[in-house]
Image (cartoon, chains in turn brown, blue):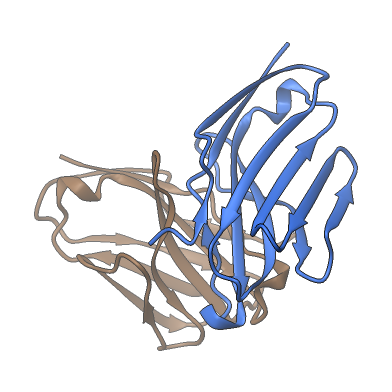
Length: 113
Length: 113
């Protein structure tokens, strides 16, 4: 069965810390995505990647960066965490054609204090 | 600019009755639409999809209808069950947005026993 694994379910970090969120998929998917989910705002795309070492900005990239050194791993980095980055972070992967939809991880609930 | 809109934040339905969740989109280049279901503390899971060449797709208790002229789609759940209580997201994709999924804000469905 297809799997997307996010390394942490819950994280609490302090303002100003550098935060790493890790995501691994075992499906050999080309595409990987990072979204955040906030009440009333739905799922908003932060960054995505169509290939190793390739990245593109989504709708809300400010304050974030990403790394994709291997096909199966896509990392989201909060350079200096702020309280407005408290959110549910969701990683997803897909084949090159999105018509098969995404497979999501279980999410990481990040709280920045 | 919200390209995919779910204007009802919440919906409450009695068990056994029909649930109808609505979604509107603005981009006429979208050609594939999906519905995802999300339970708290879990990632979204794929529910059902429809291509723009169709106006209806059915899978068990779930049916999605697409009205291209109105740029509107709806998800019907019949009969509704308490286990259907979740947040439902509609999503759209097309050649113009290079395979990314654009999500709506979500509708929280509560099915009362």
